[in-house]
Length: 580
Ligand code: FES
Image (cartoon, rainbow, N blue to C red; front, side, top):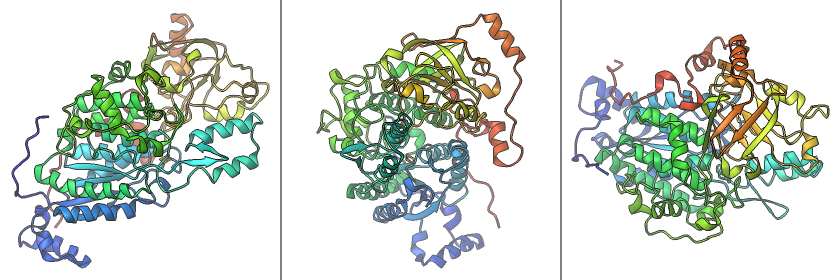
């Protein structure tokens, strides 16, 4: 922690628009006054942009307009001038072909929204999976004071007395219908129980993971991640964050002061402890790229190895975010990491205090939700990064969501050339597959899908499910929903669509995985692999025109975060000439 607050008062960038008596100033200020703002609001106080990802078509963020009012109240109380600004909102459950394809577009738009307007600091009002990383990426590239406020998770769902986790039970019930254990009518009845209140997915899926990552990075106030969307304390958190951002602007406390290498290391270890989503790998790599931090897949493997998964939440465990909040939430986990020597305690947070200052006094209120280390769900809970001739740049696996007996496995490959091929074949009783096989799915990576769909947790064939088998080894260049589970190797790099070795796997090849040894191997002779790669030709056409063409031309591999090559790094907040 080496931050020194800047002296206050001083001239802020918003005064470039609103300060003085020139014609241009009167132009900017005068138009704002059509909203009924008194003249003294333009006196040099911090102008705070509330970047709101509300959208009717992003249901997880559907309550953020109400929450924005509490943020505004806090900003007024702190002596700032709040302006609510709508920004691109990529809903995980709506956007096609994938929300991931739009993460970079959202991040690029947010960066320009901040830089091009009279904003001195930002409240990033986010929730659904991609909204959190995209806004943090954009804010990091501008590097003005910013604080994250998430919308919070939904309340627990229940169906016939059983907890229903967002996504997790969708996959589970779907497999039960295929196996004949649940009727379609029961499935429809269960649908109504899945989303019981406003908010994001109630499992430790990607939204809850990214909210936890924001808090572990120090970019949100302590305790933010787990408060349910409809709990009154969520509104208190929003108001307090509004107050806090005003002081952050006065102090000039920026993302670059907070998102240091140590902060990212804290986040990676936190991800292991909470059993967080594999999507965090991609998003943190991309966020680090914006912040100019050298973070690699090897950091994920190195830092996660010794971290036990102690948060007993679906999809790895039993409970849901509501119970995590009642148990004490993320501060308890951070305290545990600190006690185990797995936390950089002096990492700075948006509060102006260190992470250890924030969490060292908290109490665990439920040891069945936040487990003692002796009862950890997985003793080595971090993300495992496997490498070998099938994944020279890595493939990732979440051990806490995998089956222990499959972590070392050799099996015959059953290959699906793309997601359509998978859908066409998987329910065919004649498909030559059993539970010892390795399912291989190609062309679902950043360029291949495009946008890296969450289809890596391919559903199993019905004839395997009917035997009571619920897991098989699956390998792809896709991602997986944070709510999903299984022995699923993801993000295989280089992806098939650019000619990675995954592209040349054939039915009947044998594949070996050994998670302890971090090895993934296509068991064919080296010269055979080389010959197949030399003969490979691209089979996914590049899109022509529009954003899809930009995406295809500039997206990088999953192993570095799938950001655009031209967006990495921080470009600062300096802006060019006035428009008049
Ligand atoms: Fe939006 Fe899960 S789909 S939070």
